[in-house]
Length: 173
Image 1 (tube, rainbow, N blue to C red):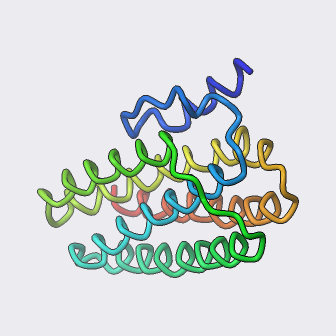
Image 2 (image 1 turned 90 degrees about the vertical axis):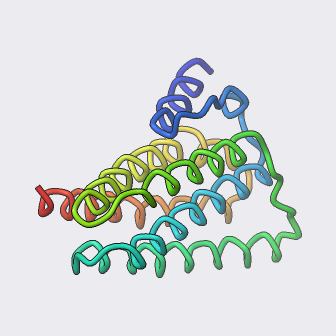
């Protein structure tokens, strides 16, 4: 249990949130809500980048984030409808949403290269955190095989996102 608690806290520490409730094993409805919230957060951040950035690589990356996270969120919604499960709002998803709102606010005050650098660095950190949470807590905690499979597929996609973000970050230096 201690390793799960440590992993969750480490996974979300850059968001500046206190996620003590996430240390407990989440239920499938809570996992569904956390995963959907994490996807929505990245969609909103990417939409902000598409509007604010003039860097072709940053905009291209952001458009990829919108496309991929919308697709995964649609699959998640389809699955919860099929399973007749209602995603359950929880302290973790609320804390993630609050931290993301603060980050978007911070980014909105930047422009040009400063915005691009901050956005992409946040994307690298965010994907590392989400991937770690998927690997160490969400996937192992999922009871339903279809939910677990969707999370595993999402993890593969998001690992690619992390690599792409790292590549774009290296190009911005």
